[in-house]
Image 1 (cartoon, rainbow, N blue to C red):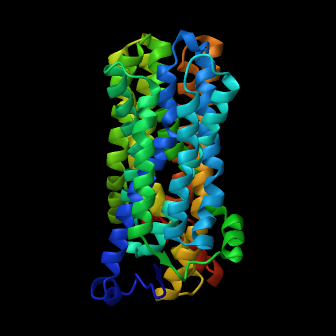
Image 2: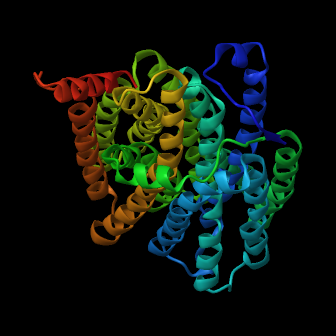
Image 3: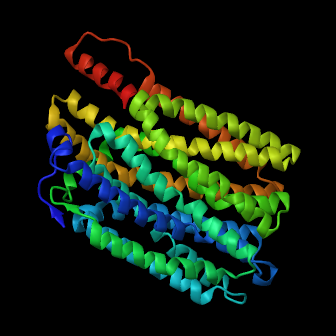
Amino acid sequence: MWIERWEPEDERFWKEEGGEKVARRNLAFSVVSEHVGFSVWSLWSVMVLFMGPEYGIDAAGKFFLVSMATLVGAVVRVPYTFAVARFGGRNWTVIAASLLLVPTVAAFVVMEPGTSYGTFMLCALLTGVGGGNFASSMTNINSFFPLRKKGWALGLNAGGGNIGVPVVQLVGLAVIGAGGGPRVVLGVYIPLIVVSAVCAFLFMDSISSVRNDTGAVKAATRDPHTWIMSFLYVGTFGSFIGYGFAFGLVLQTQFGRTPLEAAQLTFVGPLLGSLIRPVGGRLADRFGGARITLWNFLGMGAATGVVVIASLRESLPLFVGAFVALFVLTGLGNGSTYKMIPGIFQAKAEAAGLVGEEAAAQGRRLSGAAMGLIGAVGGLGGLGINLALRQSFQTVGSGTGAYVAFLAFYGVCAGVTWAVYLRRPVARTTATADTEEKSQLSYAEV
């Protein structure tokens, strides 16, 4: 149904008039749809484990398959974001869920030895539509919750979606362990897609006040914070999805694990990273997203340093332990960075003189437009990780060179977070400078 009046910042509306109940219901079924979307997007991280020598595809070719799924999933996030305002959150969720049938049915038809590499590539590209579900889902849920609840709500929504990565890998593990083939995995997900679309149709809502706003899109595109946050999200979500897609292949290629042995380890990191994402949002609600994000990038750098050592020593236990820690930190960072986005735009609105619901509405307007762009650029980080690993294995026979590059990148991300959102600017005497200072200082709390 369409909701004509929606004022989540109004405490009476939120608590006494049923706003919170409606928001939570939409959040629950948004999580279901996004979860299935992430599983479909991640399908080829599982399909490649079934592709033995009889398929005639080497490790570099498999890395390229998962890279192309990542690429499409990142790019389609931009139109998916704006589709919410064009069609309504409920209607677009039904459409987006239904579109997931295309890549799963296509893969079900062709998944066997003898199929051309080009056909497999086309199927991998089609799974990218599952990555778009994240952007539309986050934009939709951002409209339902007040600022004080956004860290938790967006973290829970995204975490429930992210967990689709380890779940599809667990399904793959169960099928491999039982001696089944890849079509069994696909057969599990086809009915789940139908269920998610039906649930969205029956139980979700659209907010009438959310409309395509060309001005908001243009303003978000021109705002430097959109691109700064995109860069930081490359470090958090780009790492999560890139490692999630590549980890099983790395275990097979660098450490000689069998498909079953790799599948037994692959799901652990993405599972923990998904479960911890709401915690990152909650911590950001309490202590400020910028502070949590800074410390998180420092932790990611430390964990990546251990990964480099483990790779050089060829120590599988140390390598897996460090990577699991890295996955957990990507999850925390995903939650804290997404909490920052609406807070930044509301802080800017308040610095411009807006107050109360007017400032909150302006913050929702711009942050909703920015989220699609930030999510798309962040998703491209996953592409970068898979291509870097592919190049490193082709060049030196291991992923060590790629891990060193990732370590340096996390150091840059930490520096940017501190310089832009935590470093106190030098006090100035003009009225304009005072306004700018107050605005920048408030970013530490977003």
